[in-house]
Length: 326
Image 1: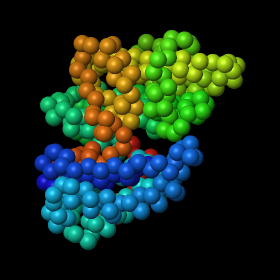
Image 2: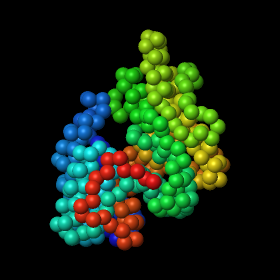
Image 3: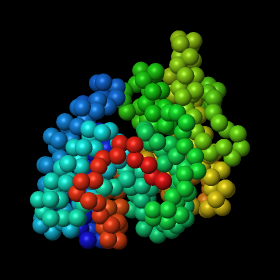
């Protein structure tokens, strides 16, 4: 089956084509226009998606070496995400579906992030634990099978990626904050500043990062001549310590020996190295860097799985900005 995937949940415009479980073409256009605002402006993001989607679909099909007449289905992000950006992608996909008489399916963005790991390793087997960590979500999932997920814990306030973004703003760094803090951390001492690790009682699988952000703010107010490399490295380490510890506890609770890391923060090299070191006896899988941030490859792949099972959406399906996984 040949499926076109469309992703517009936030500030990446992405299109991809999946054929028989393999991605044959994938394009991502990040919206650099938001950098000067220090965060995503929803209305601008929607306009950028509308501006580029048509040409990106055409280019993606051309790179895949197929015509639009060869498409057999369309998958598009239904949620969660920003209302305006979701509407842009869903309306475009619906128009294409109606115009070409193709089945369409709305895809859960979070679920797609989990299944991106099957693109990284097709031999991955159920069940496994997933640490889903991004700018909008920090969650631990027990993935028993497709469409069978148990939420084990999530953030009570800021997501880890949000903590990186807010921390970067405090340090005077650019947006998005995660890569900027990671860059500044190189050569810094991760033990120089004792930042707090919240909710670290044994087997508590919930997260909280708002206090960490506040601690950084107070520290920078008090330490006018702080070594920024050390501060960034210590701040990053505080986030990573919590993520890895909770993942380790989740594996023990489920008696699983396989876990995957999904979402934009999965691209962080310190997180990858720390997980490899502290979970050396377990199978730990990361998607390729191109599949960590928002992308359409994961949407097309999961969409094809569902379409092949005979599942599709009615043409009037709604966007779900607060869409849940379970």
